[in-house]
Length: 315
Length: 302
Image 1 (cartoon, each protein chain N blue to C red):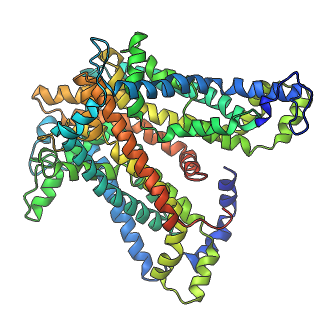
Image 2 (cartoon, chains in turn cyan, red; image 1 turned 180 degrees about the horizontal axis):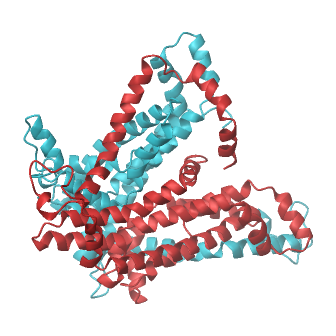
């Protein structure tokens, strides 16, 4: 690939091959084919990333040009903005409680579907449908189910003598409620399908060997299924953590961050800053904080993965 | 795609092998698994059922406690009432414009770009392909503000253009990845034979690769449709006037006006939600294989 730099006029030097006209034509065609992507990459990704980094160092409200203020936005976020800290805390709560449930429920569903029983396809469909339901629709229906006074959940609780909470209207319950809503809309989706594919890729002779060695079902799960599934778990873990950090739509529609900011998540606050208060500079700084957190977490997970993710030799 | 067809055709044999050693559930285990499956799928399905039941209720049945489970009379007219209450036809039209053009853009540009990466040798190819994929770990929040400012300068805010344009500039990293992987599985002999016959590269793509890659194209189209049908974040940022709303924004708009109206509107909200969900579910049922395939493809080769 480094052969490009060979000057066209010089005589063919021994190690470097001169490009034949055909090769050159091939390269030009290749570049032409990827041009649509490249234009998009420059104008919708690279440019905006640089602009966003710059804007994060300014105060900018659209009306007047951005004013450079150094790291003030970042300093203010961490030292002088209670809502920033609050939104960070809410988001961490959401991530810490939703991700483990999300991974383990998806895995459980996949394991149940992988037992080779009849009607599996029907069950798979029923688990999958919530994940393609439009978020706006799913939030509206859950809001109605969790309605404090006449909602069906509180009615069922009343049957066993429990006075249900206000759910989305309660500072204490709003996050768990949003987590339940999020789990419903995600566990049966791509995560479960990826686990299923992972399970189906486990060679059955491993189980045979384990069975001959006298391993019971639980031991087989522990010493065959789980290790063989670690690549899928790792993949799902990375994606679900990123997705959880970015929770927005459900909270925007269901609560607008309330009550008392207890569901003000990071991206929601970012959105309000950018498009409601028009603090584009501050919002850009928030976006970079989010990016750095997500990147650091992903890198950390890749490092840790060497200890627990099992890749078959030669893979 | 090829693996899926082979597993399907060898299913009986494989099933038998599963049951003997691998699928441990026999005897008392079977009823336990079935029970869990039934209970869980009931829990997953209940919200849908409750929504449909609510959508068919009369206004006076909505706020009754204990709740009415089966409405006295099934008011199918609620579904029609939704269309009279809010301009859902406009919302639908806008959504179809965005989704339709984006699907076109995604398919055309993602195939061109994927073809470039799959079939041509050029300096820097590996690095450029890594750059394609790098976008997958970049949170959209980082680029959305400058993008908004760009579109604002172009005077495109409150038009559908910002929602459509990206599809024509690369068609999305995942789509490029998916199509490239698929093109790589198609033997080069076919291209070469066509080339000897004097076909240009564009004709090879159009007449050989794309017809062979129909399943991958369908997967791209489906996910593209799903994304645009369900997308809320970008329409929320770019669209201001009701005439330009897509369905998800329109449904949200309908909700806020219903909430502030004082009259019980839950049945209509639920009816609107049901109508917005039905096309997606119908799509899933008619193209189940592609869904599963597309997701599985994203999980491998990572």
